[in-house]
Amino acid sequence: MEILQQVGLWSWFFLWSLLLIAASLFVYLGLGGTFIIIGLALIHALVTGFDPITWKLLAILLGLALLGEGIEFVVGTFYVAKKGASKAGVIGAFAGGLAGAAAGNGVVPVFGAILGSFLGGFGGAVLGEYYRREKLEPSLRIGGHAFLGRLLAILIKHVIALVMVFLILRASVPDS
Image 1 (cartoon, rainbow, N blue to C red):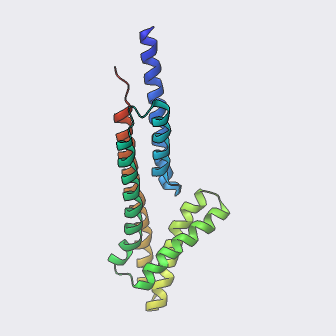
Image 2: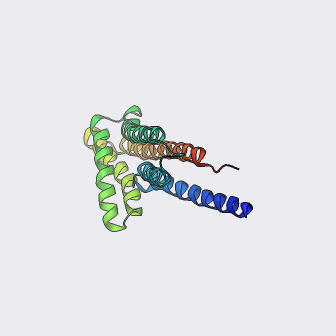
Image 3: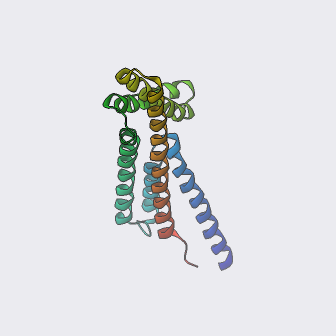
């Protein structure tokens, strides 16, 4: 009977792992994957009486989630500035990303928001730079950097989400 209990514990741990990893992928959808992970950890903590997931771990997870948001904003916005964009290009990339996400979500919910944020950031940077320089080639180059900056920001945020998943799984691994 004890062996069946161990199999059951490890089966639940496997499903828990899959759920957390799936939640980390929500980062790519722009749906706050790091905060979904915190929510899942909080539910686990409430159900288990904050053992093994403690308030301290929840606070660390919140700090990581906020760090991820900050890094996503800074990298996504200022990467393009570091690559030579003017103030108009930086503002265009940021505003275009927001507008593209909103417009894309209206066309194809969720996935449209992702594509729209990338294309909107690209288009906004190109328009901002073209307004400033009135030359297409450098404007397109800056738009490409805005696209790459957004991609880099999301990849960094996903790495942070995976660190959060690791911390939760390390704390909640069943005793053998």
